[in-house]
Image 1: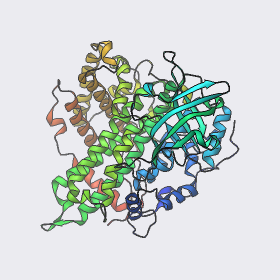
Image 2 (image 1 turned 90 degrees about the vertical axis):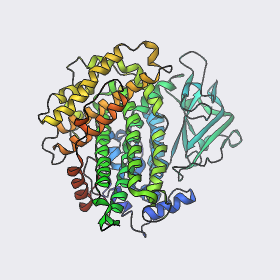
Image 3 (image 1 turned 45 degrees about the horizontal axis):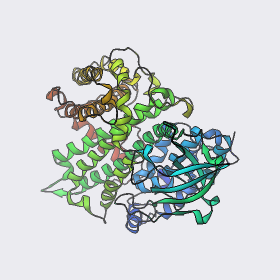
Image 4 (image 1 turned 60 degrees about the vertical axis):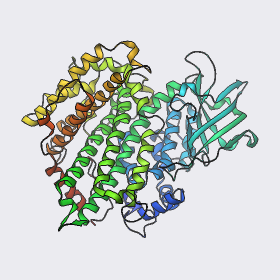
Length: 574
């Protein structure tokens, strides 16, 4: 059923153009304005007006309901300029609405989907209320209760650390609706304007170290009546719906974090090229060049993994559960490590709260909050653990993912949220593609690098086969958790190898320089994760930085971003 409100086509201007030069002190959406709003702990009003005019909420509404949501890959790319300026703006203005709406697109009926589409398309916001401070990511222990009572539910309890609770037109609540084993919790859509004022309230705002422009508070309900028509899906189906919708939101939030590190890399490169020491710039110092090029390589590896998983949501939906968990586990680690490395080059300026480089401090504080989102790394590892047997089978299978999973420009079918599953089924095509790509490289050093990942996969398969069932759940030991880390790194290697393999005609992605650097750095991480297996230090100890540093400078001078898709950015040279 189509929404009564529609958005025709994509906007003429990109958000990158509309948000303008971040280093222009007079730009109301630039770094100076972002930092001033952050110090006031307020959303950046001028930038929110730009997003209003661009109708950003349409990105969260499926095309069939009048919006622009079609490919997850495109959603990430179109929103990345917002996260280059201010992650709190991106999360606070709209991504939380997307997290809430995904549950409605997945489990809602026609009327619920139409209602939410109309709310979003007229610029309203939604909150998604999973968290309770006493229980963190343990959703099944949540205590907010919704008691069935005739044609309504009666809701009592609290939800805390909820974004936009104070300005949301509606909320998706994760609530306890019964005690039947396996069917204890449900998801409910409530419109806050229709609730009796004396039965609910918005809790005081939480003060946070990062994302200080987000309005994070909570809800408290006291025997508050909610229409039974707000139930999303069947009674007790809340966990299944949430875990399936997480597959999309985990991929999206990880991908948007790339925008923040892109901006941080630009900031530190700008500093390194302008700061002179002993007759030369910081950018001329070999260690600084190595750090900058290494972060660039990690950003490319993270982008390959994010894009591959985003396309897998369309093309391999029955496998997407473990892929999305892996991307949400690994990418924040790569990005936070990148920020720490960049901080070494920037030095004490990385802690400043004002001045040209102060945006770096804000991005450093914001990024971990985005990485946690509604489920941190441990929760993602617990999603992967019970699915590891499929990885073991893939090590001895010839099954590969379709080439379109890796070819960025190929069309994909519309996103079918109903095809997502709580657990992956059968073999693991992305891991199967790792083996195929490892056999496909002709350069001796790349063959050597690919061989590291191939050997680790077979070693991982043996360890998975010996893993007792008790080690595949919440009681798993540290060595079992390390298997999930190795799995995520192998997925990243597969994404990089196959991106290169299927982009032969691309002037950048079709080359070996970026792949050599990305794989070398992933191999170092793999060696740390697999403490029982030695890795060849020569394979990832060679100087890989010079070609990537040259590319980094070329892009900076040409006004291009640093992700795998070469996008124009509104940044001056100096």
